Length: 89
Image (tube, rainbow, N blue to C red):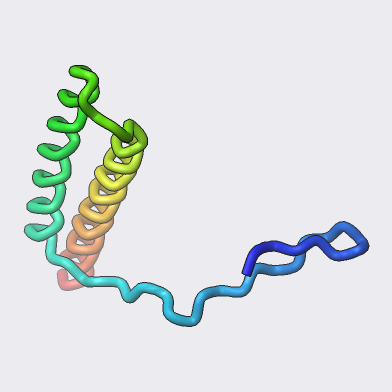
């Protein structure tokens, strides 16, 4: 359901999807493996873009954002692991 504008000009809230995606819990090793795969895929996409073979250059933006998301997830997992070690002491 998209935002709808009422007669007063205010936007109505957007209804959230009932079947939202479940979050998959991954280990740091799995995240690092995914990161390596995405970096290799991004490198290949950049090469093909420079050669003029890449049909949809928007793929590069999506890949960069996914790489940044993985870096963020890895950093958060490392911070959580460090904090749990400090709490144990």
